[in-house]
Image (cartoon, rainbow over all chains, first blue to last red; front, side, top):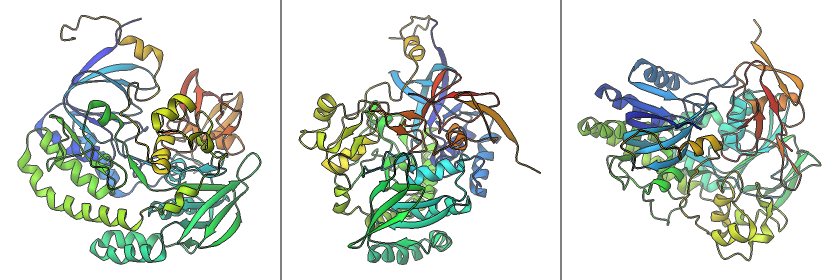
Length: 431
Length: 83
């Protein structure tokens, strides 16, 4: 067993979505050595995910080219954070190796994940998240000729429908849980953000229904049909695939593990708390993009730019981007108001519906638990490979349980990576 | 001009996919809805979140456990779905 390699950088950015790309590009003229680590195979985040089924917009290309132009930016794709073994150091792993990365400043651009909620049949092959379907198609999933039902909440449903249709699928229904009044109000508000209004027109879908939610996905070994509640009427729709997403949840795990404070719990999903310069509650650690609350790529770019400038001590250059951030913060607030989840959505699971997909724990086994820790210890909910990323969010929505701050390893890791930490080496700085 | 393809093996069977495809896409090309693994109670599970969160698509790729949705196919890759 050999000790893990130790690398250094002035600025470490976790996540190469719009926020991370903008942060790196803003910080680059300082000459600092910048490392950007990214879980996906290529930079761009979920919104600009590249692949054989993706058509990258010009903005994505522009930011990616900018990353490549700066010799002091190093992008490590396919890389995950495993642990924070020492102050100012992260343990990283890719498909080949594990290593330690020391940083002076850190910017968390860890994005958001889809809120995936349990309903009968949601474990059948052919059921995916809505954004999940989009990501899979971009990465080459063939869906030509498939009949697809998309359900849940938010503009992402329409974006997923457009991606599926462009890939040759037949989108047979888009079911939005929000009311017609809420969606119409959102559409009207888009006049304040003309670029978003233009996108909305492009995404308009004849199969779109409001006040509609999934009841179940059915099939023997894979999806054959879906049941939906449309208003007070239940309908069955034959289909090959069901894609359900109920909005987004900020990825705060790494921030929480490091000790960064969260926003107050009153307004939905909690996010990493930041100040005007995108600094978290910990000095030297910044956060930008969806991990500070979801609100789209424009907001993420503005926040990332501010964080990048601030992290290299160039606060004056950060200032002019504050107005842009304010503008898109308002858009985010409108989005959250319009697509707030109805309490009815809590009635999606039946007693035998699995909530924890890793450990196959049914809803009925959780009903009498006193909280998340009780559910983990006595029902094994959240004890599997996803470490509660999916069922923890679901339990928070269904029961109001708040999972405690995560402990390392932050993501499943190879034994060799973890064991390498224990090998003494000649780094005199180690405590 | 046709799209470049590459050849990999899933559970010993040859599968051809477009260059740049994820292993999750290759599982679907190989048949069915792309089952990657069996759950602890023996149910078939396929890629679900599509972005490296849910861990439902974990498979053995050249002997290492990885997520099919985050892994890009390579020529000659050997993928094994898990029981």
